[in-house]
Length: 133
Image (cartoon, rainbow, N blue to C red; front, top):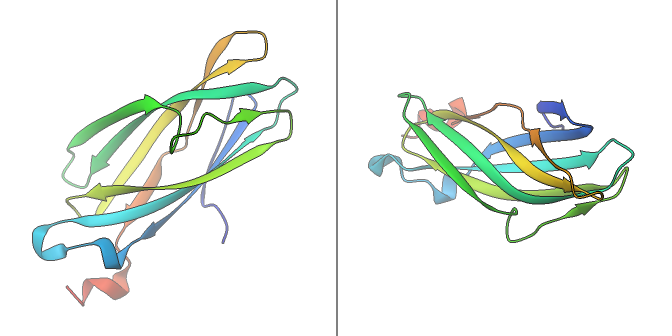
């Protein structure tokens, strides 16, 4: 599967793909679970480590939620030039559509802090499931 959402920020490429998790969703209670996979690649010439992340999550009613914390999925990956790290996580929403965007806070091998911005990526219940609800 290709990554439909891509950004390039401070010599890092961030690629994101999303998927609806039918089995973990409960539409009768307005609970929709979405999975996302993120691939981060150091396209530059300096090594750096991911220290923390901040997410903006917006549902289709316009409600905005913020999530931030150390690392990603309990890891603080270190990227040498050309290296990648891929992880998967999830996002619960009260609506059948939404979007998410944010950034990762990084520290390079010289101790300089910088951030890499993610693309805006969308969540949507596939049309084939809507009739089921």
